[in-house]
Length: 82
Image (cartoon, rainbow, N blue to C red):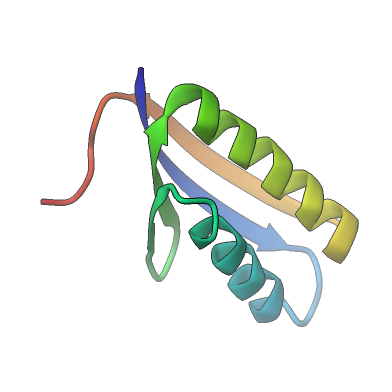
């Protein structure tokens, strides 16, 4: 099953830009299709792989940068930009 995800991260700290940059860079290294936008990042790939990457990445973010709010929209199907 193919997934399309729109993910936003809101670090709860004054210096919020670097945690977001690092999060996007980490996502881009996974081999999934990742499109970083100004307000969210879109991620595309196989269900099991995407869900594992989301879990691992959010855990890494919490351990590295502390509290953040993540908002994800997850849809079955291929919604990649054409």
